[in-house]
Amino acid sequence: MKTKPKILVVYPDDIELFAYYFRVLKNFQVDIVSTGKVGVIASRVGSVKTSYVTRNLIPEKHINHIPYPKNFKKKSFNYIFRFIYLILIIPKIMSNKYKLIVFHNPPFFLSLLSPVFRLLCIKTAVFVMDDWVEMFSITNPFLYKLGIGKILRFLEYFIILSTNKVFVLSKHLKNLYKPYNKNVQIVPLGVDIKIIKKIRPRRISKHLTIVFSGSLYKYKGVINLVKAFKIVRKNFPNLKLLIIGEGPIKEELKELARNEKNIIFTGALTYEKTISLLKGSDIAAIPFEKEKVNWTSISHKFFDYMACHLPIVYTYTGPHAYYIRKFKIGIEAEPNPESIAEKLTKLIKNEKLRKKLKNNCKKFESKIDFRYLLKNFDNEILI
Image (cartoon, rainbow, N blue to C red):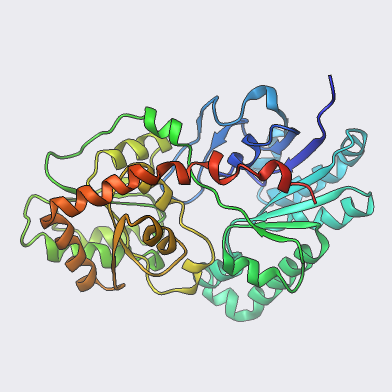
């Protein structure tokens, strides 16, 4: 039996969705260096609280797991220790004759080893999920203004320049990196439609429910959504708003919704529970504000909403809008409470329109399954 060429994937941690890329690689043996179990989906900030394991995510026969030493992830400066660990296992990496070393970014710290592997004649690739410097400008504005953002951007460009191939999620990132690397390719994500179909819906109310799922940052527009809901509920007293997720503005949102019993905060949930609640809701919202950061990567929640057959009220503030327009599964609002309230009201009143958008989700759901979106990835992973 012919031996499959080997790829080594270096996770900074077990990251939500990243595993899909390697599940479709049928012509390679994939080894993973990570801190957790193989086949885990776990989000650090967003709507997913704890990891969950599905054997369908990455077949065990397809993956060889190389865990970091357990005490490394308990250290304060764990990326430094992981960096050192990767240096220590370079002889093992060399003996395994890997065709490609793959790094997940951001953060880019572990990818600093990319030039080292290239000197050893091993090709490298980096996956970039979002624009970490743009995110840093929002999460750490003071440090960003002190010049830390410029240092991080320099580090990022150095790594992009020193790797063989770059995979990104958005046109923004491709345009950002093209001057530094000619091998930049957009690779979409999608969802596992088969898994989602198996999850049973769970309703929180017999009345219409609007749902938002994701990390709770101001630029996500959740404040506008809560304000819009309060406007709409004056005419629909039984209407519910379900907010799934965690983030820095959660307490501000709770204060804004203090006297609203019809606004429910679940906190972070497992992926299965999140999907179950999405399938038990009636209307989804992507109320993002007009911020540059929203264009740097596509919101994966769009794919979840569509896979759960939810009509969407959205703002034209990121790559998700292109797909929603393409598949005709939502109605567009301006990024302000009044406009969002107007479009929500339109969907609430027009059951026929809701059914039409829902049917379009069903009609095109196969187009967002990761197997379809990544059907050529086996031929694209190597340079």
